[in-house]
Length: 138
Length: 463
Image (tube, rainbow over the protein chains, first blue to last red):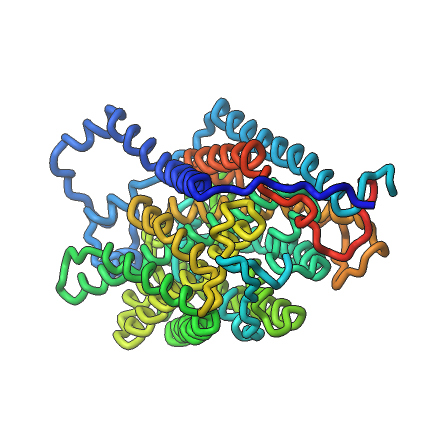
């Protein structure tokens, strides 16, 4: 015999609005946080500031950029001169690994899945008990 | 989930069962085909052209595991709602809440990326026609608003529209491939001149796995429309499998043509690489066709994304994981209209405020969290209902090998994302942690416990 069904409270309109807005705010912060961090970094990195105030960049050639004639032709067809191409070519990822940050991210992932799975397991037992009855009742 | 839903006034209204295999193909390929038109090429930026190809194959293995696992669980959990319904029946409500949020985030971010690219394409073409500095944002907003309206009006019209424009976009990829004549290497496509090895070494190959996901991300979304299929048992597998074949062909053609036409540095940051390939080739009608193909692929993808994201949000409203107000079906159009409207501002903010690679990263990470869930979901599924205890539509071979491989590859993609996009990874993890706290400590009290298990199965073993 299944246990007495749980009767959830009825949520009023103000509560629904607050919950909906809260989710919107959470999503908005999650989306914007990397952009804000990037802006903050750009504003606080002395190297970037110095580069920005250096004035006009010296002229470069395709050869200096390591581009063969076929590549050069493709850049030109795409409307890019050597200066514009240099900006793209110079943009490189830095794959130096910050061990502390890596461990922090790993800890976040482990904590997230641990919390989710342990809470889900507890909730799931309630679902099963209501659907099939408590275990000792068969 | 059942096929009957509560309407706004408490009446019972069904979603319309009007979709066939072609619509499912259009929905799945429509969502993912845009990945051949844009986004995949950021993997070139992270590791070079060869790294992108390796990532395409490795991530292909990840998706093979996803397909094997998902086929068994979806064919057995015959309730609509895809992975969300699976999580409710196998792991528990908080996991289901998170899975639904993964779907909403993955599809809404993809929708935002599509709208962004559609706007940027208009700007590019306007520039080529002599109208420099066109503001792309009104086009972006127009795409989101028009497609939301289309979805609001009805699923049949929406997915019929998707089927047509997806087919045109696919023909455009094939046309590009044929006209550039890749079987004559050195004439138009010259890989010998453009392939420069691995500019970042093997760490670049690992880093490229992140955007390698973009070749296939979202194909599993076809099962979201199960509730609206005339015959879900036939339409979902047929539409999904033909969709995967289509995508594998399109991905291979895309890489081959693009990597043989432009330098990897340009390709790695381009918003519209196939349109750029046609521009380099210098054939005006081809360029015009690729313009149409790019535009249609973004529209088809955004359209499918609104469809899927709104249904995931609607399902949460119906099950009270979110305010019940979202669980309403439009009395006339029979669509989850409130969920459709609610998600619009999220897509607009993402499209206006984030860079394209950032939007895509959010989408990829949401999908990746869902694939991580699948790896332990199937393990628990086999444990709670061992083979022979319930009827399975399909039993995937070599269990638990696919789950182990999937889990390991998921960890590799988390690490790949950490390389260059760590802030995005941290941000989305913090979001899901806070959302989980909110659900566990506040929202769960509104959920009817027994309603979360609707399959006619025996009691799970050991519980």
